[in-house]
Amino acid sequence: MLVQQYLPKDLFRGKTVFVTGGGSGINLGVARNFAALGASLAICGRTQEKLDRAAAELAALSAHLGGKVLPVAADVRDYAALEKALGRTEAEVGPVDVLVCGAAGNFLCPAEDLSPNGFKAVIDIDLLGSFNASRAAFEQLKKTRGSILFISAGQSFMPHAFQVHVGAAKAGIDNLMKNLALEWGRYGIRSNTIVPGPIEDTEGMRRLSSPEHDTRAKGAIPLGRYGTVDEIGHAAVFLASPFAAYITGTVLSVDGGSNLIGSALWNQAVESLVPRKGSGKAPPGS
Ligand code: COA
Image 1 (cartoon, rainbow, N blue to C red):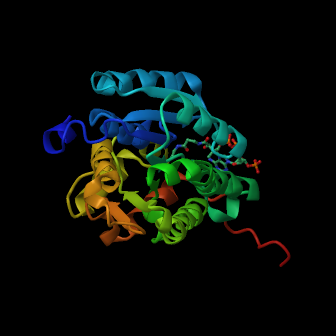
Image 2 (image 1 turned 45 degrees about the vertical axis):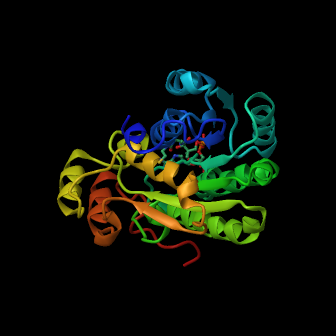
Image 3 (image 1 turned 90 degrees about the horizontal axis):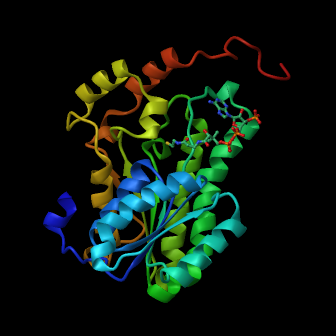
C-alpha cells in the first residue's frame, strides 16, 4: 500500500484504533491504512458477517507486526451496546488510542417529503452516534492521551438539495468535534474532522449519484477526478499521528477542491433522480 512507502511501517504498532462503521467503504479504507502501519483495530457496525469479512482483510495487513483485529457488532445509536464493544476492545486488544467516528446513514429525500422519523434516523446514526462513541471511549482516550477523528461531509457547510437531514447531522458533528477539542484538550485528547469529497466506489456514491452526474462533476472538480478511500485513509493516519500533535479542532477537507464549486451541479442532478412527491401541495395549516 502507498502509505507504507511514505510513513514508518510500524508507526501505529502497539496502538488500538476503534472505527465505527468500519465494515465497509471509507471507514474500512481508513482502518486498512492504520492496519498497514501496524495498528490493532476494533471495527463496529450492525452486521457481524460484514465485519468478519473486513476483519480478515485487516488481520492480513497488520498481523506480522503483532496487530490484532476485533470485529464487534454494535449499533452506534445504542449507547449500552457501544460501551460493551469498547469494554471488550480494552480487555481483548488494548485501550483505544484513536477513535474514528465514521458510521453514517444517507438517502436522497426532498425536505417536504421527509418524515420526522427519517430526519431523526440520520441525526441518530451520524450525530448522536458520534457523541455516543466519543463519550463511551472517553476514559480510554484519557488514559492513552488519544485522538478522535470524525468523518463529516461537505453538506455540513454547503447546503445540498435533498440532504437536509445529512447537512444538519454533519454540521452538528463538526460542532461536536470543536467542543470536544475545547473541553478534552486538557486530557491530551485531540479532536478533528475529515470532510471527504466524492469518493469512488463507495456505498454513498452508489446511493447518491448517477453516471451522467459523475461525468459533469469530474469536469468541474478542480483536480478533475473523484477521490479514493485510501486518500481519506492517508489524511486519517496523518491526523492521528505524532506529526499532527498540535492539531486539534480542525476540519480538513480531502476533496480535490470540490467545496470550491458549490452544490449547483448536484442540486440539478438530484432533481431528476428523485421526483418531489409533495411539490405543489399547500403547506400544512394554510
Ligand atoms: N427516503 C425517505 N425516507 C426514508 C428513506 C428514503 N430513501 N429511507 C428511510 N426513510 C425513512 C423511513 O421511511 C423511516 O421513516 P418513517 O418511520 O416515517 O417511515 C425512517 O427513515 C427510518 O427508516 P428505517 O428503515 O427504519 O431506518 P433504519 O434505521 O433501518 O435505516 C437509514 C437507517 C434509513 C439511514 C438506512 O438508509 C441505512 O441504514 N443506511 C446505512 C447505510 C448508508 O446509508 N450508507 C451510506 C452512507 S453515506
